[in-house]
Image (tube, rainbow, N blue to C red; front, side, top):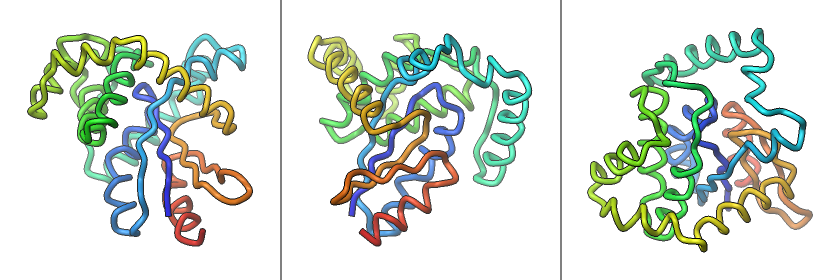
Length: 200
């Protein structure tokens, strides 16, 4: 039983999903893989140069109010970021290093907290280094590895994999199956994805 959790650090609804997905999967006995990717290429393919929440103001106003309700229910702090959407490229590359070294989950949660609760610039090297240091990690080594051609290529490939799976937004969850992956989109579809994984 396996779920892939596809997330983008700039994504608002990925914040509450990231803060609960590990616990929910563990309680259900489902294996979880954290799969950071980038939304910009996906949005670009649809002719968008910005988040749809900025392109369509009414949708954006609703999203922030909806997210506030969700975060309140989960006991999460929510403060609008220093800018929206933030650039999560560097954080996503570092997360891939964390996937290899076993700290992708706490790092990803810390980045979301920095973005949506701490109002920090998650594209800033000092902010990312601070997160790594607070986790007891070698920040210099992790950042250096994240900047290698191999890691950059890996994030690009992972984003292309997301596109190939039909992912169009974040958070998304995919459950492997004999006839291909089953796709679930949105923080509110996590439980559905878990049930599908258990059924599979």
